[in-house]
Length: 134
Image (tube, rainbow, N blue to C red):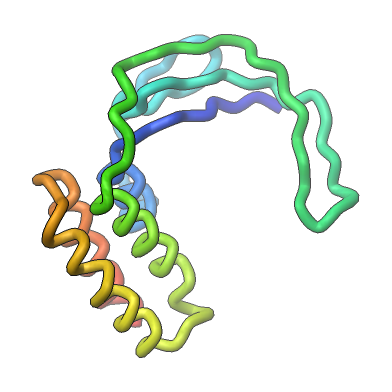
């Protein structure tokens, strides 16, 4: 019933979690959970109640502890594009290859124009993963 919810603007860590799920992520133990050091904020939660009666489940939680690791800078266009591409990567078994390639081509333009070094690294990892997936 306990978990740690993270707020991050680091798209590289999100992409790495997707494409390298068995790789050891750098974690820090704090409070009663594991903290992702690249996160901006974290919230240790205790789930008090689950409502599974609707199509979308809902959890009610109590915040047990919080922490701020760094300032949240936000998401630029490249980070948004990478997040969309990461979502596509989780749906390769549902979508036609031509649809994925078409959407990636559009997202590529955004990444090329607005990405920084971490976003370019995430884009490379995501494309390598997608080329192996289909």
